[in-house]
Length: 401
Image 1 (cartoon, rainbow, N blue to C red):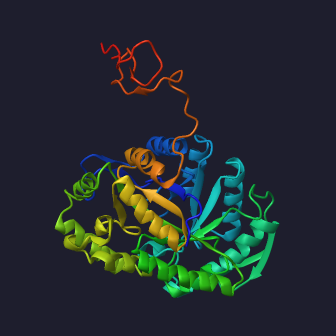
Image 2 (cartoon, helix red, strand yellow; image 1 turned 135 degrees about the vertical axis):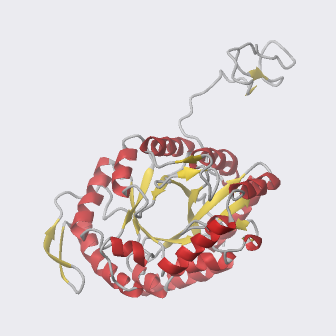
Image 3 (cartoon, rainbow, N blue to C red; image 1 turned 30 degrees about the horizontal axis):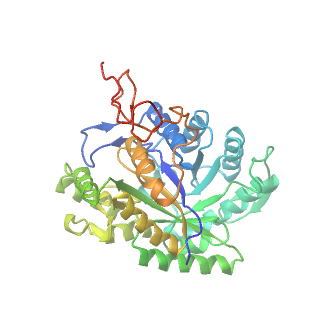
């Protein structure tokens, strides 16, 4: 398969908090709306097309946070979670339409049915795993009809919406794009007639290829075409050696006791097939973390959900991404720790290697002379020998101050 165009590249808002070390409070950053605005504004400027805002009991509410961030950004799109059962489809339709309107068409919708029975019980949802998708199917019959047509009616087993109405349509027609990720048979069957983009967590390419074939076949049976994205963390440095050292540093303060406690929680509280697939990659062991060339599962030792990172130089990581593109992946939802600094690293180091333009709307910093950074002193930068000017040699800028 020929890679036709650059990836659509999104970043992540860590709405439950951020940090420099997994499993440690050292250099951690608590959940803070001002910090989330910093990340969103950086992502907007650095060339990311959008950001994923997670959902869950430990996270800020995704629709409200997206509305705040939309007011502080210009082009950034917001992949916001809908969790069926937490609110009615009519209420979610009003929220989605309003957010799409106030952001001028920058809403993306992420279906999150949920994989923690304990957390779902706290939200008042007590359905078994597969039945949650039957419920979600009825939910989206109502939601999609409201968003596309302004009215819906369903007297279902789980959802009853009698002559529901939506007064104001979204900007995007017929609806904002719908994303979904789920690895179980029930999840894939549910998504086949609904999803515009299917998301997988960062599994080895062979496993991703098998999943793509399965999802594509299910979608075609419903007469629908679906595109594919992947959720990955990134540790990109100028050399492979530096990148692997940064990966080791990220878990350098993570104790075996913390790993064991996290893995016990995953096993006890999660019935997610995707989570089980993530755990199977490393089995909670530090000596089995490179699960495929440059695909590192260290994050999944303590993080639920997406637990793998691509690690390496820009050239190495770009090569690994091209392998996923050749399978059919056209979208990446990325993150890194801490998210503000890593947004810069990925944009500045990796984007040129994968054909993305990087920072947008930069104001020119000279009258055309070639320059190199001179340390930020009040004398300015350093003009090079090849630049036009009176001196045939490098001219050092004044460096006082």
